[in-house]
Length: 428
Image 1 (cartoon, rainbow, N blue to C red):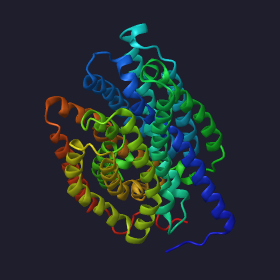
Image 2 (cartoon, rainbow, N blue to C red):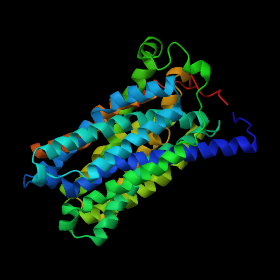
Image 3 (cartoon, rainbow, N blue to C red):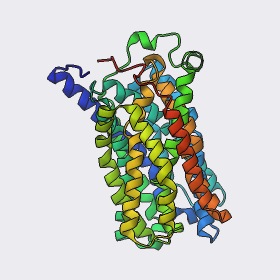
């Protein structure tokens, strides 16, 4: 059923989605640029002479940033449910700005020794806290302002901008590669994207200050607002369901996005510049796919989209990763990664909305943010580390099996999704 909105109401809601998602783009750019730039700065903070070992250590710091996400999901979810969505989103983007600026000026191992990687670790923990709160609050806000009957389409723009953040991060690295030599990139060029991210975050702050609040006074004042006890007592099944399918969804997402660049370089033997170009093109198409798959979900239902995601993920993951490992063709690599990302789009285009529909407004941001952050921290943030660790052991195909098994779990958990959402579907 499609709700009726006045032209003015439509404009307000669409502008709110643009403003919220624009801030989302900057926040995720700042977080992801670490992964793409680490090809050049890993040796500056973790010198060892072995590329795989350096990548492994930088991936470990990336994973630790994810471990802060549950705390961020709890903290910012509580703020969003008890104080308001807008304030939560403003604070999180300011924290990300500070973290990016700190990395941009951080001395290397050659300058301050072991303090350099330790400080990098602390900064990434700080950014992990910020981004841990970003997903849940933004997903909640965009789900609440999206036009009824088109929620899949409009909510998909969370991942349009999330992927856009990745795309701009890798594109920034590609542009720098055209103007700087590899020694220059390793010496100082890797700092430039972090400066760009810090400046962009200030711009996003202005956009987020224009947002109107979607929380109602009665929800903010509810005794269970932002309460973990309230979620566990009344919405435990929903919380565990979100944990279940987010585990597989996060793992395959990070496998074919942030880890894929290193995989092409370290396993397929592709030059770093070529891998960056391939990923730029694939991420661009992936970004463009989101509204299309969101529209598909509006037609066939969110539950069916999630089930297709799990089933196709089980069937395609191992063959795609295996072919990529022995592949030397950039065209084939691009095609296979695009196919994989199309499968992932069945999940990412509607993931925030599916989660939001499972919780009432007084605990929605906390329920969405914390359940997502826990699963993402354990399975998504560790994707690079696990993949590189298996390769280091000489059993890279174990990683392919691991991802496939998690996709099977995602499929099984998707069967538990209600045919009619418990919340949001009647909201105007």
